[in-house]
Length: 425
Ligand code: ASP
Ligand code: MG
Image 1: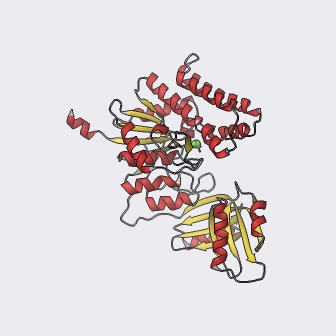
Image 2: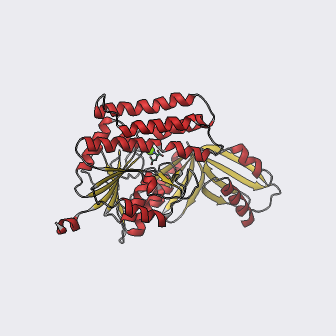
Image 3: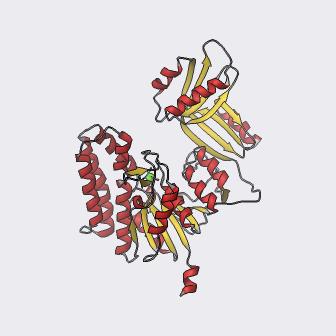
């Protein structure tokens, strides 16, 4: 008995929205979880694209717009259809019913002025409802598990929508709450945490991968697996390029570079905690769980990688030049970068020539007029929108030649391993 206990593995699985988007998908999650014989923590996101739907709810609630009721109804109906597919007509889990009520009660109240705070109080209902459904379903089909409210274990500061993890405190609580004393399977939410005063926070969109890595690194598990609708990490997005190949292994560093450049397979923050503890990260297909997928781990030897293409769309190129034709100096960079930081604008790429300072940034949440208003005090501004930043890791001369022939290039930057090109979409 004691021997068996020692041999028992401990792992973390993470399932994203696509893997729980309908009743069939949830049944598939059960199949995958059932294959695991050891101890397991399952981290789950909101079902389908519920987080996007809840973002519209937050907006309507904050604007005190009556559309909020219709959105709430959509949110409930979507889950009710899944519940029916899993439990039949009379099977409404009590926990889900309570969460619906809580959310309804919340949107009846008057919102505070703090949009980011209100966002976090609402957005996590996607995760709460989804984990309740999966946990109850697994219990109903005989796969005993415990549902854990991650907010009691994952503590953060109060930067709403982009909360920073309190590692020391979370370490203590996660070890205490995920202790496997009376179960081998915990089901919990990704993306969410809470402050010292127990207000709900979130780690940023797509943050569930990071949650899996936080729990995995604190519990020092054998591996963390992220289950996706793709076979693993590919050399490019197969929807956008042909001749893509699957990559069987990557170093943590390579994976950080790729995801930071815009590869959406995993959240860029996921690697650091796992790297620090040397825990492998597996990216696997929930459609064909027997396939090996991609493993991200410590690699000491040199491995041959094909050119890897990563696209970051909807970028804007802003070119600043001094009004009096003076040379761009370090003080200009300092001023511009500090201004962008103060506006929480993340720079994708920076390049300077004698008289131009080129900044590439994500246009998605950018108020160009506001940015230009302030910068035009000091600089002449030119800009182009609708651009895509193509990052090519491990580029070859052939690949670059081909790119240059095919595309209109607005800006180029090369380092030993990486070429970046800004092209028209
Ligand atoms: N549901 C959240 C989102 O869509 C978190 C996640 O999926 O990782 O952003
Ligand atoms: Mg999601």
